[in-house]
Image (tube, rainbow, N blue to C red; front, top):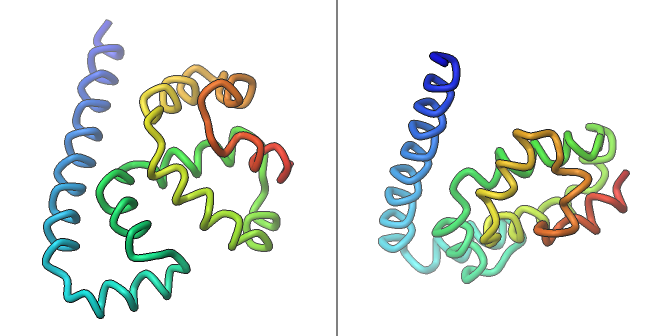
Length: 129
């Protein structure tokens, strides 16, 4: 029982840190000089609008995406050769409204089998396997 409680508390702590970091990133992005925001977006290969969405809603998405890549068994050699595709998947992951379900499916070990039901990147991950 203590293990379950500890796991729940750790999960809450991770979500709180993600939220706190997201709020700080949103404030920082809002105060950023538009020219610098444009340069950062260009370096990342996304529009300023997409960059703003990633900042605003992407907290924790990078970890979920990495876990989903692992769930699909996509190796480092593929991720290295598909960097442009993975940049696009990262933007979709950050915009995704099913992060909780994603996390739950990953925790349960059912993400790969059920990804087509909730993950906008499921077809991409499937094509990379």
